Length: 275
Image (cartoon, rainbow, N blue to C red; front, side):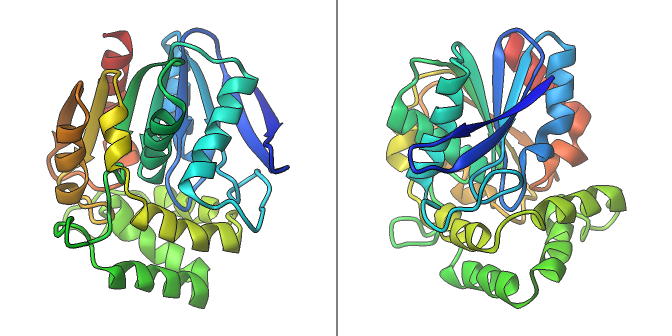
C-alpha cells in the first residue's frame, strides 16, 4: 500500500494512492471530493485480487492547487500522467460523477490502448447543462446556485449538499451522519478556485463525441432518484452513445450510491471486473 505524487507538465503535483497487486482498477472521484471517496471500493477490489489506484483531482485534497488548468482536458491529461507514471496497462477505469466525465474525456483524448473496460457511476456524460440540443438537462440557474453557495458559505453549503447527494432528504433514508460528515470533511480540503471552476467544468463540458469514441466494454450504473445528476440527461443518453455499454439502473438510489448501496455496487463492480 503506497501513495505518491506525479508532477504534470504545468508543474501541478497530483497525489495518488496505489494499493495491492493485479489488474489495475483506476478510480476517478466526483466533485467536491477526493480519492478517499473510493476507499471502500479500493479495499474491496484489492481484497479480491486487483490493484487499486485513485488520485486527488488538481485543486482537490492532497494535490496542489494551481490557479489555472481547471478544465476537463487538463483533468484528463492529469489522469494520463498518473497512468503513464505507473505504466498501467489493461486497466479498468471507474469514474463517479465528474470523475465519469474525466475518464470519458481521457478515452476520447488519449484513446483506449491502455484500457480494458470502463465503469460510469452517476456520471455526468454526455452533458448536464440544458441547451436547445439537450432540453433534458438542468437549467443554468441550478449551477449558478451552486456557485453562489460555494462563494457565500461553502462549509454550510457542503453540509447541506450531502443530504440530496446521499438521498438523506428522502423518507425512510438510513444514511448515517458519518457518511455525511465524511462528504463534508473531503469537501473542505478542496481549494476554493478548484472547487469553483469545476462547477463550470462538470455542468458545461459536452462529452457527446468522447462517448462515441469509447470502444471498450462499459458498465453504466445510475440511480433513478439521483438528485445531483438526473438520469434523463446522463445515463439514459450515454448508454445510447457508447457502443458496447450496459445500463444498470438502481431503483430509488441517490447520487452517492457507492455509499448507500455499497454491497450491491461492489458486487456489480466485481462481477464486471471478472467478466
